[in-house]
Length: 549
Image (cartoon, rainbow, N blue to C red; front, side, top):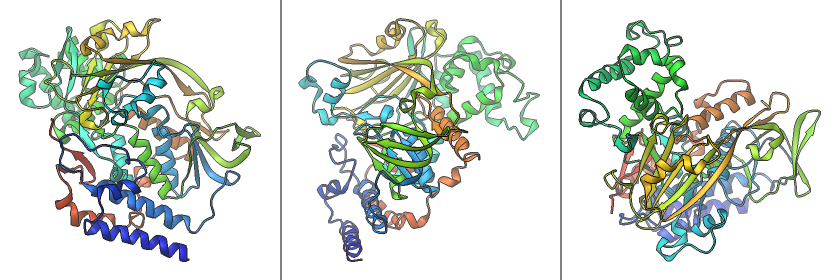
């Protein structure tokens, strides 16, 4: 009881110091478990301490308060769920299960969070990972200024992942910036995907008459409601193909390419002969996401995508989840065809269910393809984008005689992922030939000159075991798309197989008693402490509006 009182007193002291703005940046960083070595955004006003400091204090306090009533957990105990790997999929599921009251043990063979979806820092580690000889040149700046994503993806502003972040309030641990532009490749050049009616009228993507037909198509999509036959215009959403819809509005091949790949974000043309409702919903998602912020439908977390799994790991820890990094996995223990535990360093942790990425159970997955990703370090923004600090470029398959689109994601020093004046562009696509680097040449040509390249070719896996009998639930490898919608679909599928019920966002919601009155404190200080900050998306997701240097 004395230990409890001392710890609670320490927590209250920090809250009091912070309330009177006596907590300095150094103190705040000393209690943070994930931001301690990070620089402030360049040329920005002082960072608002409340977002990072308050959440870290509450997170720290929650660990103190909850740890007091239980002994230190050992490996040789029983858990409801064991999770192997700290990729985003695994961390979200770990957080969900913890919120649902499950006893969760989460382990990773690596010494860092993120697995495939990690952000690598310092830059020297990236050179070692890709076997680049020597150290980064001095022109690259300090190694600690870099947080380089291994998997290039953005968040759809109105997509499923943002909804998960909001409902679980993991947004308390993260800051985001809007991606400044979305572009599409046509005829050897890149063109801005229009984000306003004025841009649409001025766009060179379509001729005058085609713009009128396209406008009618967009109005049809916007008004389309499966529950209102008047909006369907004799279209059966589950039978009429998307190809038939394009024909209905007399839209040509180039407009079909632009719509299907830049708005609906399909990787191939398979969607054309599938029911139109899927494409209509995808276009609506793009439109709704774009309407949130205007510049583009995409968001990106400051300090890299590796922040996302860490945020959900915190959620799990607050609800009693136990984490062990740098933990070698020796054996997944099976009895009578069903998982009963995991062996590590001679000890066995027992469980009822297991969640893991494919690398832990290679005998229960199959290879379904390959993805090539090329991380490119630049000293300049991409040409013909108006010198913006972030963007996405989609190269539709038909433009380069391929079966799959090529994607380019660019972020920069403005997102605290690179040294001052540096940019990171990541090219990705599904491999189709025996010479993958040649396949992405059209994208690399857009980025020249390139200061340094890091090339990886990754196998893609999907589970052959549904987990019904074994109770082993395996995630899919991250695909080449530049958003997290397919990842969220995988999460919902695993949840359904684990629980036998459909995924319900409401079940992820945190109880008010687990937030430690944070909202009241936040509201009383927001006007003073939120510098250069816009309160958007129900005031719970934080979009940093830093001025470009």
